[in-house]
Image (cartoon, rainbow, N blue to C red; front, side, top):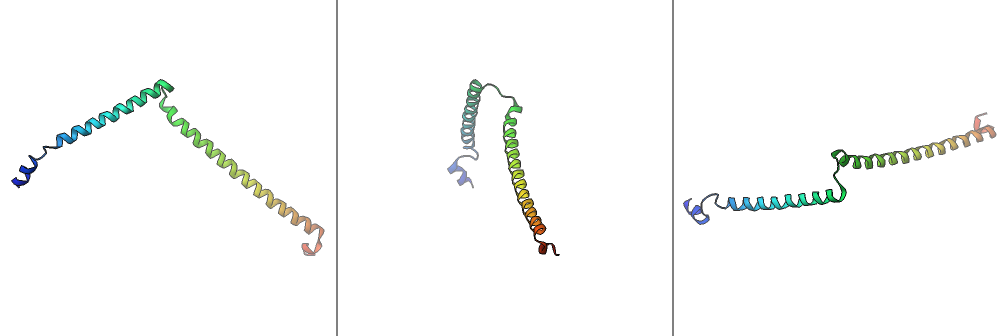
Amino acid sequence: MDAIYSEAGSPGQGIGRHISRGESVEAEINSFIAKRHNDRIAGEGERLPEELWMEPERRHNTRRREENRLAWCEYHQELAERLRAVEGHQDRCYHEPQLRGG
């Protein structure tokens, strides 16, 4: 076992090097995020947290209303076709007594 440690150094020796690299990358990412946030605030102004979820909610509700409107239009068009078919059948029954069963 001592041979393994002597070749690689003491256990845990390289851990500090890997952690410091991760911390520097994390600092770069945080800096990038902060810069993008500051640029957005400078260009658009500060947004309230409620506004952040309100816009997608509005888009969702608009899309849902449009889907419902189209579904109702389709329902009423199909209903009108069925009523026209029934009306046509009733007209034929009135004018053709054999269809009435008499």
